[in-house]
Amino acid sequence: MTYAAVYQSWKDDPEAFWMQAAEAIDWTEKPSKALFDDNAPLYEWYVDGKVNTCWNAVDRHVEAGRGDQTAIIYDSPITHTKHEITYSELQTRVASLAGALRAKGVEKGDRVLIYMPMVPEALEAMLACARIGAVHSVVFGGFAANELAVRIDDAQPKCIIAASCGLEPGRVVHYKPLLDGAIEQSDHEVDFCVIFQREQEVAHLEDGRDVDWHGFQYGVEPADCVPVEGNHPAYILYTSGTTGAPKGVVRPTAGHLVALNWTMKNIYNVDPGEVFWAASDVGWVVGHSYICYAPLITGNTTIVFEGKPVGTPDAGTFWRVISEHKVKSFFTAPTAFRAVKREDPKGEFVKKYDLSCLEQVYLAGERADPDTIEWAQDQLGVPVIDHWWQTETGYAIAANPLGIEKLPIKLGSPAVPMPGFDVQILDEAGHPVGPNELGAIAIKLPLPPGTLPTLWNAEDRFKKSYLQQLPGYYETGDAGMIDEDGYLYIMARTDDVINVAGHRLSTGAMEEVLAAHPDVAECAVIGVTDQLKGQLPMGFLCLNSGADRPHADVVAEVVKMVRSKIGPVAAFKLACVVDRLPKTRSGKILRGTMVKIADNEDFKMPATIDDPAILDEIRTALEAMGYAR
Image (cartoon, rainbow, N blue to C red):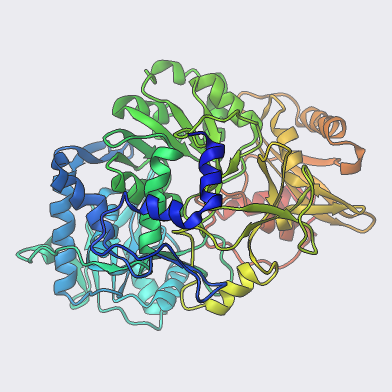
């Protein structure tokens, strides 16, 4: 079947489409129907079915005789460690951990907060919660104590599972003091903490509260899988960049299973037994969906990688992992490729490895500029697919579905909407606009299975944040357009569309032009306040290593390029060269924070910022241009 036929079959009969997709999952009790809409605009899926995520991700593969297949490959260039865990071993380890949690009083519906680095035990903790119907909330390892405390108070976990430390190139991140500080700051009292002691740092355990990961499992009865209702929360995930009260995205169990299972073949083009690698972190939605759950649900081998795209030890680490572990489908963030390209613009490291196993690469997290995609395609010789989704949806809204049909790649577009997503471009009054017109990207309700049904303990906030502005639609918060072929273009967050003398302009379109300059490795464009024109665009450029031309020349050239590609209407005259851009740990550039610095407004330090010191560098650059004063 073609993509068009598959998408049309969903549109013609969504109920039949999603009931058929549900056949690929093992149910304890099959649902009577797919969509439950009696509480619209709050929709739920497969509510009256009974199912268990851990069974579908682990036990069923063992039952099917595939227990000897590798489930998880752990590769840590930081600790020089590699090992493999089979599905049988994973089943034993997860059942043991789940049994130990249950013996300490954790039951179905209880929350468990997980605060772990990129080690297989993080996945085991998630699966152990799923096994007994506990609701996990993974918080990115190394998150500051006060941010962790806020999440403890919101999720109210019965217990916390943490590691003694995390590891960054050249340094140890002390998790345990951060955890102790968070528990002290929070109002909610946890019953106990499970600490996975790493040899790089053995943490002090508090008597009566903290138990050792291995010790508390000793002699405990392993737990069987507990079936849960289709709408039972699988997990809570707090979205990055949260200000004020945390925003806990809820993931419903059955829809999550069905949707993720569907994506592995249809979007990522992998079959059971093949190796899939998402180079992300378990603290982000990509880590939940495509390091832990989806690859295991479909019986793939997943990779847990503890390292960085550059510096562990060099810009060839991605290619080593792909070559060594025979990765067929690789998923990373554009920012990771930009880091590799900056260190190795000519791809010298790519040539050192046999990458014949690699068939496709997927990018998501930040807008993938055409220049980065072209560089990756030239170096790797495989399709490099930009696709677009959100923490809230849990999987791709728009993609090039290689497992169904390889559609033509249009640079700058994450291709076409996936079944379940009726994507529309609306003007400020909520009316659809024509092809190639910029507007707010909205999705007609209901959203498909596995997407967020609400926010944790915050239904009113869910409605206000996503449903109120455009009745009948889910508001994505992104701006873009759809062309005459139905391809979607994500141009910016809606608050990154700037108004220059009455013209609505996309910062993303300008970034595309800047990124095409041969010396530019990475860039960002923000809108700064201007008395005359309302807003003016300002560019920040990071240059390739080895680019030693005068910065003023590069700035003059990019100004000229924007003028010729977008036109004088953009009024693009302000740009500067910086060493690095402020980002979240997942690689998103903190444009909103940069705008506040430029306009000299107060801002809350983003909880997910990778390195706060970068903001001082940005302020210095802005002051040199007459801003941030």
